[in-house]
Length: 156
Image (tube, rainbow, N blue to C red):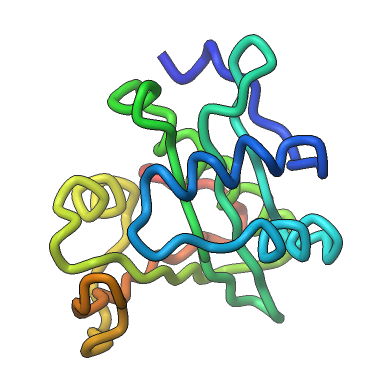
């Protein structure tokens, strides 16, 4: 089902929709200013849209051969359609094109659905950050996935 969405780099015009999704799905959301800075700094920031409406987004950054997925959000009405997977695969592809070979991310310990998604994409637990999240306070599970030099992986 993810094929019905167009995945492309985020633009300033998308930020109202992105911010609305962020506020709806996260208890401690990023600000509109945070997203504006991501667009301005040209970090990998992709959105998925359907019929001109933003349905989800992913933000990453990188340095040398390491990258990190900073934020992934999918509007509630668009969940369980493979969109989160498509966004992660898309941003990993962008990171690989920029020379990244290892990708990290943090996820709430209680977010079993997201953890299953990341595990299915080849991410494995490497650490925990105690009391990392606020509202509510919760540990973060740090996950890592390798990107082969050729950028091709059976999972990603």
